Image (tube, rainbow, N blue to C red; front, side, top):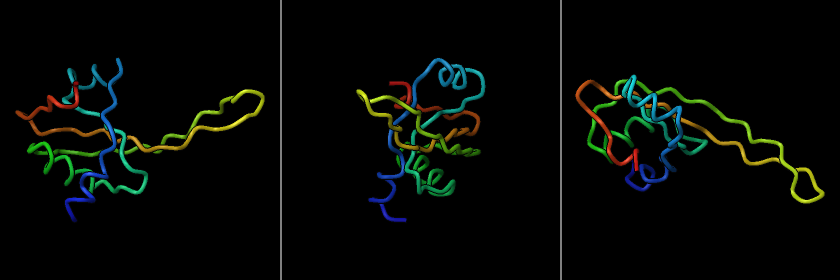
Amino acid sequence: MSMERLYHVLVAPRVTEKTVAAVEKANQYVFKVAKTATKQEIKDAVETLFEVKVDKVRTINMKGKQKNFGRRGGQRNDWKKAYISLAEGFSLDAAAE
């Protein structure tokens, strides 16, 4: 996989109360990822960019919420979320910022 693709796989870290609890409890980090990304691509991207050992990757396709935009109804874009479990002894400081 090319380095350019690695930079496009991870879109942004997700920092919520639920994800902070997952970090403290199970050493899991949550990222918003490209909709076309596979688990292997996500694993390779995290291991290369953050220099850590990934144990497991779980992905979820999130449906966009129904919203009203003025008088018109609409829908936000669908997106993909990845839960990344790191091997014991590894941690990510960049995801918490």
